[in-house]
Image 1 (cartoon, rainbow, N blue to C red):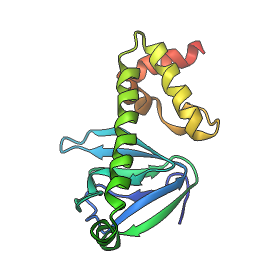
Image 2: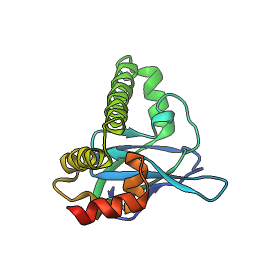
Image 3: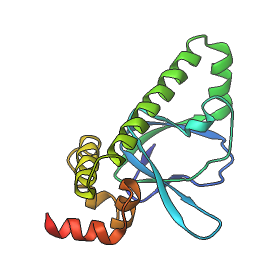
Length: 165
């Protein structure tokens, strides 16, 4: 399935009837909190099967996945996925490797958050996204607010840093 920039792959609260293997592309995952705050909390990239929290048992979607660029996704019926998990002895290791890769990604993102200055954090995010976006600049993919959420600074700080570039 082709998902165009701005289109939604799954929505927060979806029942979990499907899992998705991202063949190519990038998605941002946002979560709407009860107080009305919308927070960007994850970036999904090529090679991932998502939602991560549904790889072993079904659970409703924790956020909404929105394509940051044209992407290609394999839609996997959850019943088929979970049947394979029981029947195919190699499937649990496949899932373990997927989760290990995501943990390593999250460790890298935490490392990026602990680097000194906001400018250094912005540079690390830009470099990381550059690798997955085929050279598309971070400002073409995310708003200043979203960039700030990913690196732990306010939108105003991102605005100032962008002007200095």
